[in-house]
Amino acid sequence: SVMKNSQEMVRASLLPLFNNIAEDLNQTVLNLEQKRYSYIKGTLQRGTTSLAYIHMVLLPVLSSLLDHLGKNNYGVDLFENEIQLAGYKILNALWIIGTKGRKFVDREWIIEELNRHRPLVGDCLSSFASCFPVAFFEPEFNTNNKNASNVSQLSPEAHDVMTNISRTIPNLTKLIADIEEHAESRVKYEDAPYVVEVILPCLCSYLSYWWSMGPEKIKQITEPQITNVTANHMNSVLGSVLKLINNNIDAIEAPWMKHIAVYTQTIIFNSSTNLVEPYFLPVSQRIKSKCEDLFTQEQSLKTATRLESSEREDLELDLMKDYEILVRDIYAFGPLLIKYVDIHRSYWLKNGDKYAEELYNNMAEVFSVWCKSKVN
Image (tube, rainbow, N blue to C red):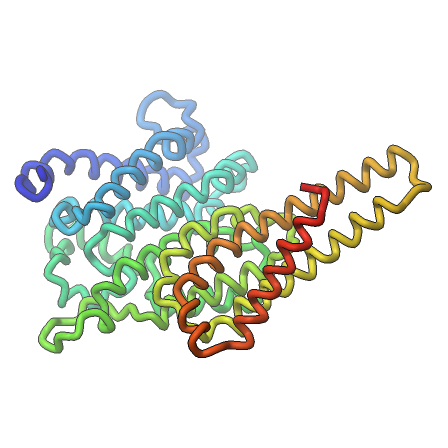
């Protein structure tokens, strides 16, 4: 390929693009921090970096490019020296916009804009984590990584960039601990939406990428360690995700439930059979209970003969909305469950597991009740 055979030419061609993207994103951060509302809105024609441009143009293009680099394993060839520095600038700016952007401003329209497009930032960071050849959540291993350019020595500006990165990007251990605490404390989605929309997509992609280069995969003692990612990290995050799903079963405001399974599936391949009882089973029990409750309401509504037509319509509409939320909950849990079962089915058939059997029975009951329902 051109990337493998003409690396210098490709890097020289793409360097201006990455530098311009980094400049646009960092200028956006500066505009948010300094409350330059006319720049953020794009009412000034010159020198502006509007949120509309960032969300509708820059992020989709950047995500597609990073996805391509990740799928073809080109990141290790591209991100060197100046382009690696630009990558760090992009990472720093995206993290700030995604996790802290709305804290800088008090204009409602800006907060709404940031809230509406926050998942785009998470998608972009996920794509970035799948191709960047340096373990940015574990900077302590940079000296062992041959792909980690000594970017801080490129210029005084580069040194400042790396200093900012160390302040902005948390360490892997702290990040996972914060997610566990978030799941345990039952924090409302509205209070910290960036956890599920920005941090989790990036972290899941990071873990699946770096596990293949971690201590469980690289057995040679002579090889310098460049990451400490293990299956335990993946199991911890997966458990937290399942706990978050369980906490939000039947929640009205939980839009992230519609796409959480997409990026969490990447860390299931190393999952443990020990996750059934504490994490998978409770979710299946809640979904089953909710499904049975809705079916009971549906049957009661059918036999209610003394209702006014308007009252019946209102009750039917409420029931439909409740079923829509149930479908959303199953859509969040189902893909994770299917992949998990595919991985461990043969083990359960050979060894038997009462919790796995109960899990099967719960989901079978859900779909059995669903088949009987006429509201679908």
